[in-house]
Image 1 (cartoon, rainbow, N blue to C red):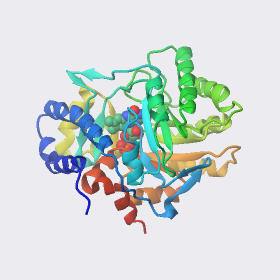
Image 2: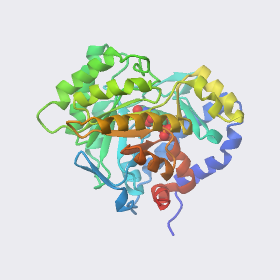
Image 3: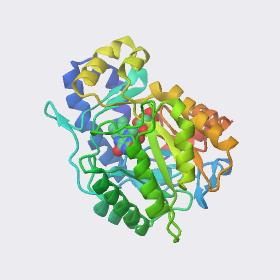
Image 4: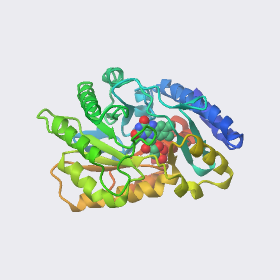
Length: 378
Ligand SMILES: Cc1cc2nc3c(=O)[nH]c(=O)nc-3n(C[C@H](O)[C@H](O)[C@H](O)COP(=O)(O)O)c2cc1C
């Protein structure tokens, strides 16, 4: 029998005492969880594994000529500093996604004396965060990713975003520079984060018309990166789970027309009023405290229905319109079980990413997380 690890002990202990901690005054809960989450990730990513779990062959897929050992992997923001590849690759993750990174180092958000505010709503299977894209910048992260010793079946992806403070022109140039840096670093796919609600100007398309700046940025990347003659890594675009469903056909026409390789629905939500009823009454005080003092993005179970709705619609649209390139729909938001993955598959969604549900599941199953997930295969 293998020995239980520090991350497994901490995660299980936290899981057991959570219902008590989250009843403390909301400011104390936020003061505990915001730093503790980061310490936990550091510990987790240092736990390299020598025993590998390989998901059943039926779970593997080859997309854009790249092998994925399964159709589920971590969502962006979990490994902001490019650590933890071995940890998740050996667990059985279908891929590894680093970032989000921006052109230059960003400290991220701080308010009320709390750096990178985060709280879980454990009884509701959800969470709030207001991180503000802290990261070390493209150059440093690309250097780290270039040194990863990859395992076949677990490709490396990078999530990148424009620095929100830059002018549109400067931001586009910065993103382009990042795309080339990561291509040189040997990443297998790139996710363009066009949906962070925790920085100024994030989430620009979630109204009733397509945002002109978003289209300009996509066109710029299409022309200056995707269309280049050398073989470029596939670029997918991550949009918000708050996206107006009526915009999907025109968004997909733009993305497929410009040669993008996929779309991901999606990022966290800022529709606090909409989701309050999905938060159990005992956690509403914490929810109201966090959303009114920090705002931030909502994640977890509360997004399950919406991510399925948006991604299914997108998959249906793609299925019924022939494409010049390989184009896939990815679902993120509330994924926590094999049932969610099967529902995605039935709807024509090719890949799934998880964040909140990953940590819930890690608390129960530790490093056997993917083994447990796929043991419930049939
Ligand atoms: C603490 C935290 C940090 C996140 N950071 C990022 C990020 O840097 N880039 C990004 O695209 N999404 C980020 N996200 C959003 C997740 O990638 C994901 O889209 C969202 O949490 C919904 O998935 P889930 O319901 O499985 O958590 C973050 C989420 C959380 C909870």
